[in-house]
Image 1 (tube, rainbow, N blue to C red):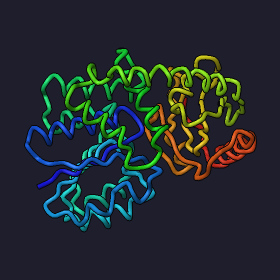
Image 2: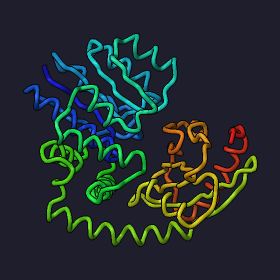
Image 3: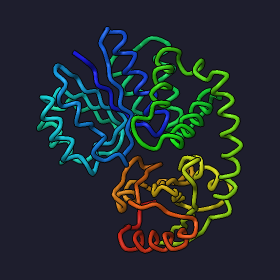
Image 4: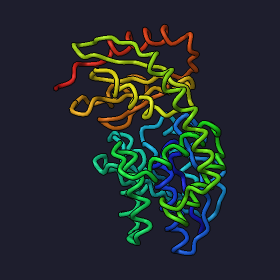
Length: 322
C-alpha cells in the first residue's frame, strides 16, 4: 500500500495538512507520494497517473469539493476503486457530496472547523505535541488570527515559494512540507530561509505600497466595496489586510495579476462572502473566499476589470442580511 497525499499548495493550512499526512504515513511505515495543488491546476488537481498505481490510498485535504473539475476527478477516483479519504472545511453542496459518495469517497467536511489541518489532526488521531503544533499553525493562518512569529514566517515563505513556483510540481513547497513534518513549525526556518525571508519582505513592502495606491470604491445594495490590484508576489490575504487597515468598507476585493480574486470583510461584519465568490465560479468561507477571473490582469487593465466586476456583482448579488 502507498499513500498518495493531495493538499492545497497556496497557504499554510494546506502545507500543514500535508505535513500531518506525511507524519501519519511515517508513523504507519507507509510509503507516500505528495502532490501540492492549487485550484487553477484544473485537471491536475487529481493527477491521472494515480489511477495506474496498484494498492493505493488517496488522502485529499484542504481542497474544496466545489471544483470545476469535479466530474473529471470522480471519473479518476473510479479508476482507483474509490479508495479515497477527503478531509476539508470549505462549504460544499449536497449534489457534490452525493457524487463523491457514489464513487465511495470517505468524505469529512466540516465548514466550521476553522482549518483543514485541525480536522486532519483529529481525524487521524495525531495527538503528539509536534502534530498539535503543526495543526495549530495551519489554524492560526487560515482563521486570520496569527499569534506566533514562526507562523508569520511560514506564511511569508509559503507566499514567496508560491510566487516562484506557480505550477506543479512545486518542489520548494514539497520540501517545506517534509521539513515541517519532521521538525515542526518552530524549527523549519533555517538561516538560508531567513535570508530569503528578508529579501521577500523588502519586495513585499514595495508591492503593498503599490496596492494601497490602487484602491477604488463602489457601492452596491447600500454596501461599500473597496477593490485593489496586487501582483502575485503577495497573497490576497496580505493585500486585503493592508487595504482593510487604511480604508473603511463592507467588502474588500483584491484582483491579482494572475487572475485570482479574493474577497474579505471587515471584522464585525456578518456578510457571507461565499455567494460573491460563487458569482465568479469560486467559493471558500463566509469570512474569506476567492475565485479566478480566468484571465491575467495587467496594471493598465485594472480600471476596466473593476467595472466588469462591479457590473457582474450588481447583476447577480442579492442583498445579504446584516
